[in-house]
Length: 293
Image (tube, rainbow, N blue to C red):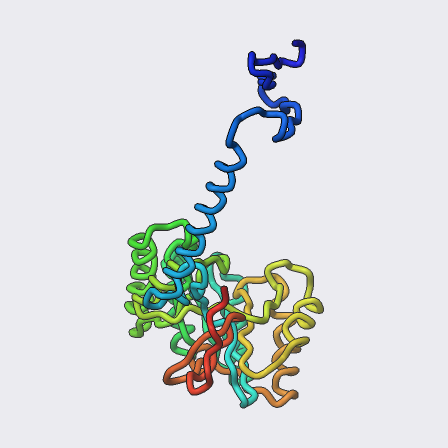
């Protein structure tokens, strides 16, 4: 037949059409296989039994309620549950240097201390600035050695990234970093677990100033002030184009709203804590919610 089918001696239709073409529809009852319905019922029963046994195993095994089907994701800290009016400002320093000296002077004018997450290649290029940042009372923390996508690395490579920049920072400032911000904000469970094994708390942000988009001062001001709340962590970049135009207005708004700007390490909660599904750090005295499925 031209459609690629032919008829077997028992009357059943067989299709041998071209690759990608669909076979003609055949009703189950038109295929004369004795006992096919019974075999189908048997297979369905076997499948149902397998599903039931699997569910029983998961429920009865130790820790079965947190097995793969309901495993808790590892999350960094995006913001912190605080009752006092404090906010943390952070600056990522990875490439340029245009604003850094003027930025440090401005922060001194307002009497605020912040956190700089620095990349190792930036540290190598501007060692004196790293010393200056630390000497003015700001935190110098890790943003990796070479600014890679951390989830694409092996565990050993991630550890090398963390160690290389930490060694450089400690040599210049006398203090080893304890906070880590993944480049590009890119992380997975392994990234978080490896960083914690190496002694770091992993930090993201819940307020993005959008300075990296170079939209102008007003969009930056709007982004950094519209959702002001206790425990916010705000993201800036040390070399963004409109930073020095926008930051004074942002700081004025924080101060006039009764907020104190503090480094990231000081906004984190002491003692036992947990991080909820949104990345908010809470004191562990509260009841942690059950892991999400």
